Image (cartoon, rainbow, N blue to C red; front, side):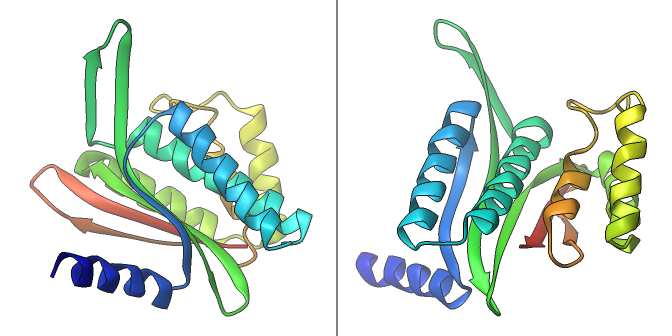
Length: 183
């Protein structure tokens, strides 16, 4: 029964075109290791270098967003302070394109601001995204940002189609957030 259950899980991933996936707690070290494995997999498949670079770049941005903004974190001290953030990341192929999808829990209080930002980015064409990116580079980072406030724009810049995203409320204070970008 155990093998059947996990074989079915593997088949579902394959049916969705998933070639690479991770679910659990991530850190910068895990990001590096996963990114290396992804690049090697794409090299073995002789994926175009430009496509590989874009997929890798979107993958890194997505995992960094999980690390920085996941509302599901564990902290501790193992000889040094450690913080791990929970989320999911998957890379796959659909309709002849690669996609990178990530998901993690966010605070419900952050959901509306994030949704508005993503809707704005999604509404822009390629030139609009480029202009918005340049505008954001000249500004100071958002007060709530744990980075340069351009990660989502970077993802949209590298994507071949408008980004796709969704939220679902999972508790009184949290929502499950999912973002998908095609390359």
